[in-house]
Amino acid sequence: MQLEFVPVEDFFFALTLAVRTLEEIEQPNLAIEVGAKLAEKFGQSSTVAAASQNNYNYVFKVQGVPEAPNLVVSVADWQDKLRLGSDYGWTLDAERKPVKTPEHGRRSEFNQQLKAHLQELLGVSITANISESIDA
Image (cartoon, rainbow, N blue to C red; front, side, top):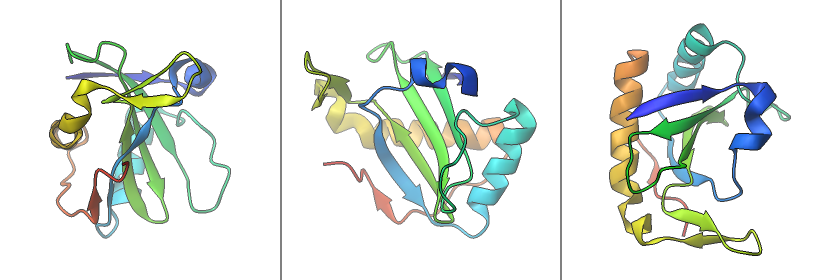
């Protein structure tokens, strides 16, 4: 898996309406630590936070996932939790409404791969979770 950072200038062109939460991770100081590592590695986040519950949202185009060639991943903080999101297993129909794809059942597996990749990329330990596959 390869992540290509999407800077704030290109954010709206990369993000799709199909991005859904993969997992929210409640682990002491994890969101702060990940935010600091992302800022160090990539600079300003992809979006400017509009609320006090959210300080950053780094968006990446993902390469190396054959079944989802135009994949997008979001790494954000939300109410002191680390929130991972992606459009993996979702697409937009002709009316631009999100619909599930055949890969939807593998979102949990993709989430585990993403967490492992982030741990290696950022040198952080992501261990706890409060919910998996929040989307229906």
